[in-house]
Image 1 (tube, rainbow, N blue to C red):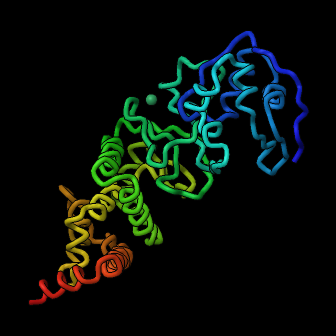
Image 2 (cartoon, helix red, strand yellow):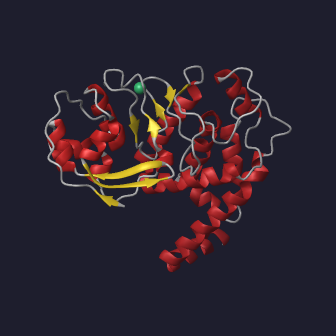
Image 3 (cartoon, rainbow, N blue to C red):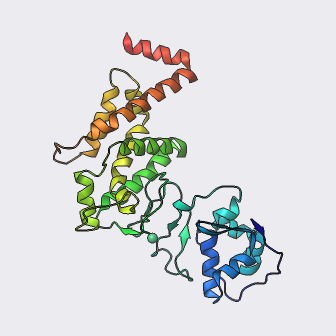
Length: 306
Ligand SMILES: [Zn+2]
């Protein structure tokens, strides 16, 4: 790692406002472009440290210097740029997405890249899948988004349901439910069934193969993942799943919601593939309850048995 020399910096003639949750690199690159400067020169001028890595040059930045070259206050920069607001947090590069180009059309300097919220996958205003690989993916995006999903309202509706899950159950409970749903969904060797291929055919007609690092693969599975999560996050279904006499009905409910208004698919084995994860999730809940309040837990068990 190389420490950058303390070179004096002055305000650039043209400034640009940062976009909410923009990466600092993206903001500085746009700032350089509108001022007809080399992006690396501007980035080096406001950097604190600089090191080379396989992914390119990585820098840490001085919020005070960025404030000086842009004329924005440190506070307003930190409000928009997560890396300046939380310098000790790690922001995974494989989660960086291109911001909705239609929302950003008035922002000068080229493509805007953001650190999206963990639950942010769709621009609801413009019907675009922003290009993520789904909730909590650790993969690297193969093709930069966005994907136009206006022909498939079910994906936009899933994003709204995801927001509702967070509002009703809180961020932590909703995240656990979505992660368990992703885990359940990924158990199948090929989670692209008939319905998902029908969706791919609408979004990208004629496609015969898709990679798991292609955002479209995740856009078409997202509605089913949120359907599973909506059952897992519900206290009613959690109680049902932790009762040994009714635990299988939670899976039946998930399948009913997934296949609503559809002809049954004889080759669909979703139930068999998601069942072990749902069972483990229900048993985990049982263990948690037993440890948290053993008296109440055993009273409930006895009440169910008598
Ligand atoms: Zn938009």
